[in-house]
Amino acid sequence: MKKENEKTQNKELEVIMYEAIEHMSGLGYTQGRITQCRNIWESLIIFAKKHRHAALSDEMLAEFTKSNVQNRTVRNFRKRHPAEFHTILMMLKEFSQNGFWRIRRGKIKKPDLPASLAGALHEFIRYWKDDRFMAPFTCECAQHYLSGFLKHLDVNGIRSWKEFRPETISGYISSLNYLKPKSISSVFHALRAFLRYLYMESIVPCDYSNRVPSLRIPADRQLPSAWTHEEMDALMSAVDRSTPMGKRDYAILLLGYRLGMRPGDIRELRLENIHWDDARISLNQSKTGKPLSLPLTEEVGEALIDYLLHARPPVPYRQVFLRLNAPIQPFCDRNRFYEIIKFYRLKADIPKNGKRGMHSLRHTAACRLLEVDTPLETISDILGHSSLESTRTYAKADISGLRTAALDPEEVFHA
Image (cartoon, rainbow, N blue to C red; front, side):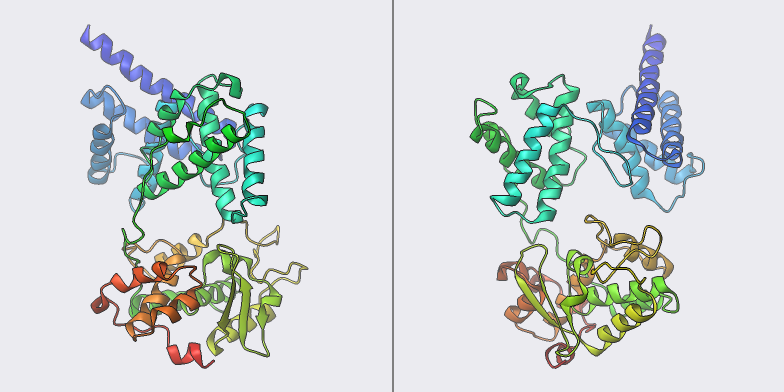
């Protein structure tokens, strides 16, 4: 009887895997990505049978991960990508719990949602943009999070707001356990605002926003990561500036590293924002909407000129930085240049050590200024912070670990 029960349980794991693969195909994932997931999931099922695991528990997934690191049980999977390995396991676990998962990276089509549900979300996003003046990126993230909530309702048989049951909110919240606290906090914020909007517009009979718990993440919960002199020298040296891609990427990295610009502001930088005669870069920040003026240093200016004259494709777009492969166009709104940082970090063989993307260069610029006793008010102006409290986070960094001044204040203030 026990063996029969184990067979049933293992069979259920196989059914979950095949349904997940079918779901991936329907969403438009590439065959290569599907094969990669299948290889890991099939190895997981074999592991579950061998060790008589009954369900996709965190303990079983942790044991399987440890076994793969030690024995490399999954074929054709590179050992140096443990984070991606973990992501694929979490995809299967999330699918087993919810019957779907939120859209991840890649050019895949968005899930179809009942018109009555999707219509309310569309109107809410319009309300946030036009009436509440929320930043475009904030609205985009909210739409992404709330699409997952609507998909959760759809999977649970709710096709219209008249059928809405408030207990499904708890089920959706429980399905977010794979996210990090900061991401969960962002989802909760968007969900509370959406539920309040539904009540305000009489779409639902009660204000259910109080069913979403508050999750406050202190701003200084995690100190900013900063690159050392040696790491930055290695990163910048890894860029081949003789190629069009290298000329573009070098200029992008300098804007983040020397001027502390946000990835969104670099992405949206336009030709008219560069004032060559005054040696300034002036723009309205994508995050706050407030104007920002930065010095166009000689180093940054030369890199921009090299890119604009010898690498930028001759197209009518006003954005400075463009894709170099067809279709030649500006970067998409969600591009944060993470792949650029990752490419050159791996090329230079620099350990990750908490450095995730372009924002770490902004942190480095702030910490270098702090190291040479630049006033917080000045750093706040350079970074375009709306509040001095955002800048105070850097004051808690370990100064002894920041003895590498990559940004020369004289160059910034007297350029």
